[in-house]
Image (cartoon, rainbow, N blue to C red; front, side):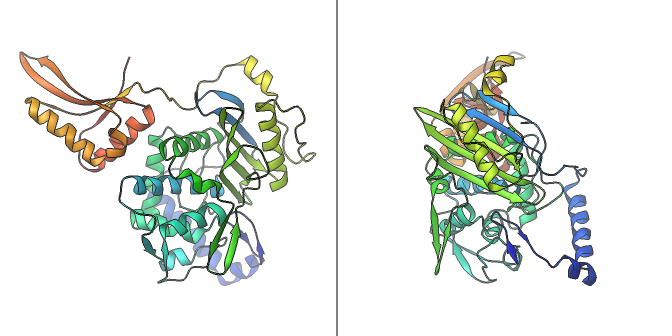
Length: 400
């Protein structure tokens, strides 16, 4: 068995799978999954090079090449899984020490994994660390089932959450990133997700900087080799399958700046890492940057020419000029009570916002609107998603 380093194992058993008919049943399962999700199959070529670098403070695009190109995320998918996990932790639905059961489905995932067994229990903290460092597929599925009951339901929730963040070109079909024809994303969407993770969950992003993870008698080193070898890198995730090529998302803090960088479609892990170093060196003005492997990764366009030719729109909007409206009422007290209830449902998002009970007149009648102001677009949309799941009326509104 040849174990690959990012969430997928290539084995020499394909001919035996064909002979036994297992491969045919797997194909049928994929067809049924496609029917369940009710989306058209997406044709994605393998190993398409794409890259983007984004300023974390402003959302400005510093470099982009094929950033909108549809690609396979591989284990970058686990970033979305962890976003959902961090959301559950922040809102008090989970605690890090809480233990989750391991199902047969979770235990049956292809390597890379911890080789958990059905009936085992693993703490949420250990499952997070295994997902980040080892890129353990079984641990990712344990987390998914803990949140949504089944991995397929979790995948639907992942996609809905991604779209609420503005990742409109992303579709998720599992929690791990194991190959699925309809699981797709873009470099730009991955930059949006990196920003959401670091801006919304600063109390948990230290997990992405974990150099190694001890579980039982084993020690697993983080697959992100830029950690500790490139100045300023503090996360976040690698990914690889045969069809995706080698992917990497990094968060880098250096010289008073913070950027997110994405490279997708590398043909080797070394070429991908060298390309990332090259782009980051240019971004931070380092004169002597690393050379990418000759012919391994398509050379990126110079940052200077990219900036001069066009000024791309920000990848994400950081200004807090959004509000959410949680209802309109005939009585002022009812509007105030509804605002209080909404804050109880989504305290971490609404606590920093300002409550406004606005008066409006319509058809000679007075109404009162309950609103929260001072939110970013991402948090406004996330608030409404959470509130609607609890049967609240909610509208995200951009202030002029």
